Image (cartoon, rainbow, N blue to C red; front, side, top):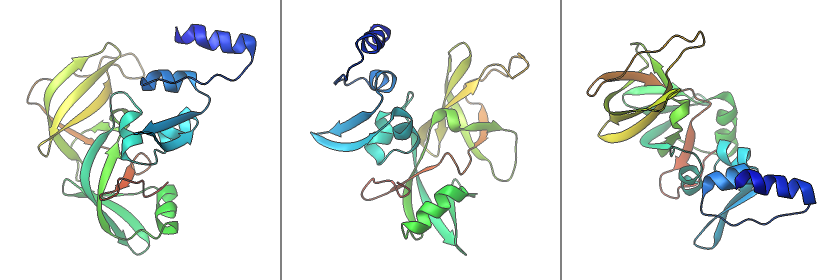
Length: 200
């Protein structure tokens, strides 16, 4: 039906207002989407803008399948540079987000860190790695959804089952310890009290 509605709109070339609770429909059908909660507009933008730069925790959790992972973390500012401290390691924030944090006058503080499941990278062992134990491994064909226990909470990672040369990657078993990380460009930083994005 989504494809048929898109074809219909292209054929009659007019504006559609489509109301849905299904975020997949909103993302695939809309040129611009309005996300509301309890009758209050949370964010307006293109699907890509809303996905890449959610205005708050509600939007971040609503857009994206599986849902974004959220963690308690600390944002630290040192010599004009920002770092996120989580799981005993310190990860630098990207230059773009660093500039937005500085422009917004953000100081060191406790935050809620958001990272999408497909933006987490599995790694070998290293000093700047985070670790979790596999609780569930869902084979999806071209990818596997790994549910990890990370510091007592569930974390979901989407890992590809094949590399670029078509070679099958390793299988994952219950209780296996996984090392992973993520870049400063894919971090979403939210105020712990208000839930608002610190880089919006």
